[in-house]
Image (cartoon, rainbow, N blue to C red; front, side, top):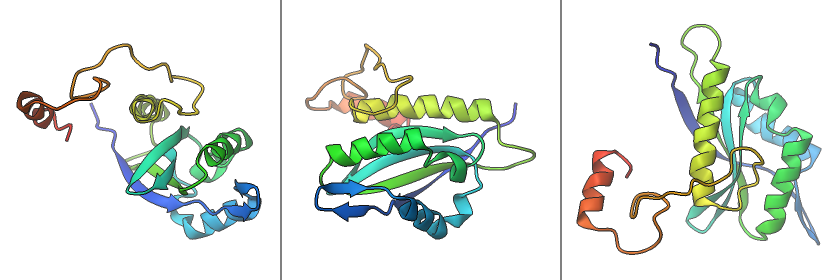
Length: 169
């Protein structure tokens, strides 16, 4: 069985027009984005649109590009999701992360890209319950205290060891 590997790149700032009433992503902003990030335009994989604020990032939308990032990342229906994120977060910088499918031989496997997208949505919905994806966003009804979806509270020493064992930290 061959191993499918993706490489995480970013965050890449998404240029916005800033007006008196807020921010928006324009056609010129999209052109500028691809001029600055040309090497990813024809690649495949997954991506996360997020807001960088303070010292962290909040995922807003997770997507996949099985044709190429340049064709799919800024499609109309995805731009509408990004605009919602921009309205919900008055402050912060919009960014994109790319998870680029590494080419071994032949084309990247689209079914593997779909599996990675599903996994990323599961992670993102845990980080941001208001994630704007429409499919695959029903949060699981289980959690592991101190590991994932387990509520707040002090993490025990045993839980820290467990997380280390599973390479979660």
